[in-house]
Length: 168
Ligand code: CTP
Ligand code: MG
Image (cartoon, rainbow, N blue to C red; front, side, top):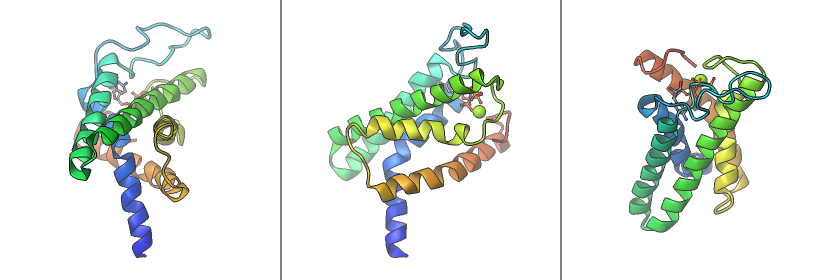
């Protein structure tokens, strides 16, 4: 039991910058879409209007800021700064990839893609950050298991708070 809690805690600690990078654009995003409204070869949006330049930059900054705080707390600032930047970058790229796939499947901006919506950001965050630090397989597995319910719960919270128009 104690060991399980320890793995859960260390998994959350590791992935936290990715979570914050994924959530920040909901509050801080908006404006010009990354794809500038352009269409892909299939005639549908490349990413869609929900992926903005401002959201991307805000997510990168917010995720890295979490790493700054973690670095101060842990006493290894440079490690956490680089790690959190990679986690945030991966999270935002993974979120973009998710939207790219959704548009190819003709799923409209904001419509649900169960699985993809909850996991694309965290999988790519782990892949990108893995070039620097690969967590233990127990932690990776824990992250993959806890992320969908956490994502759904925070999105529902954001909906209740009026930050999002959809509850998922
Ligand atoms: N957002 C943003 N820039 C990003 C990512 C997200 O501005 N790079 C903002 C948008 O306002 C978006 C909201 O965060 O609507 C929620 O993000 P998400 O659920 O990922 O986007 P959706 O609007 O659902 O679009 P998609 O169907 O492409 O996932
Ligand atoms: Mg969405």
